[in-house]
Image (tube, rainbow, N blue to C red; front, side):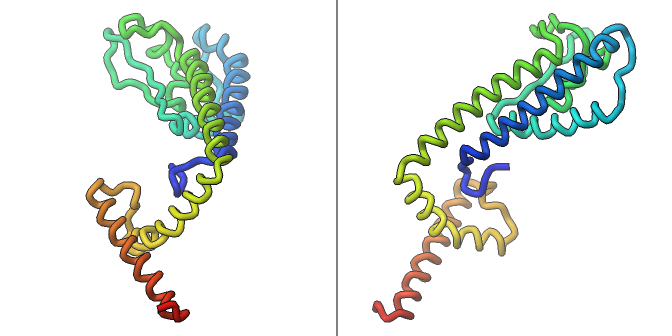
Length: 201
């Protein structure tokens, strides 16, 4: 979910990167413990360690999604089926015989866990770049003036969406313009009313 103002802080990016790192470390530890058994045809363990990796995978998925990336694994042409999408699905695909091994027919020559580890590196790089951009933006005094004006001028729109029971970020372009106009009118009316109250006019 995007932040209320559509702008993540450097700390937000740090949390996302930490989620990626925690999953990566736990995932590698899990692979080291289970991969030999799985590749020899044994069943993967369904224990507390696996549950922890699954939980961390959900958080890592959110971090990857924040970059706009998505990881997927296509089925080989000989065994057509819907692709696996997302870290939470692809991370454990190698434990299923149907998804194990390079899928040369799809142009995919890496194992599923290799795809996941590669995606984590790519996502972390993108998050690091975004984190640095956020730091640079916040060092500019105009950024804070812009944030203040957006907060003040956007408050009526927030109230309207709250009372109306809709998410203003999901409006069409036309709906967003109407909401902006209504918010602007509410701002002007509020300023005028405050001015009358204190005797400015």
